Structures are given as C-alpha cells and as structure tokens.
Length: 55
Image (tube, rainbow, N blue to C red; front, side, top):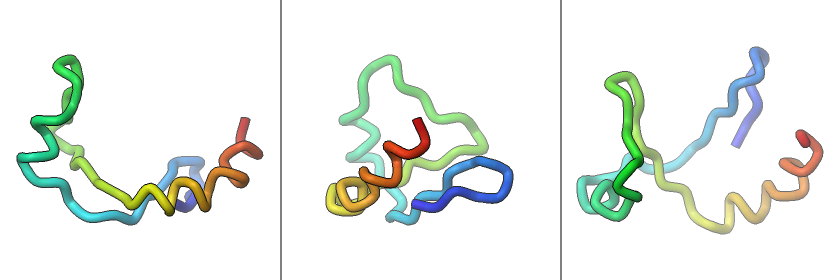
C-alpha cells in the first residue's frame, strides 16, 4: 500500500476473479473503470501502524 502524491492510495495485489465477486455483499459494485484487487491479510496488518497515522 502506498500513498500517491495526490493523496490516493495504491494497493498492490492480484486481480480478483469472478469467484471473489460472488463473495462481496449484495450492495457492493465495481465501476467500469475499477478493478477488484485482493491482497494478503499480512500486507494490511503490516501497514496498520502507518494507516493509523492517516486518521
């Protein structure tokens, strides 16, 4: 996970397949210019201390 110069967050992961889309809540949607990315839980846990600094 990286914060870009313009404030957006970039996430490195793998592109999710249709099987992952089926696991999302019914009200979740992905826009035509968006992709669903899956990342290992470890990555988010490792980034947690830095995310708290953003609050």
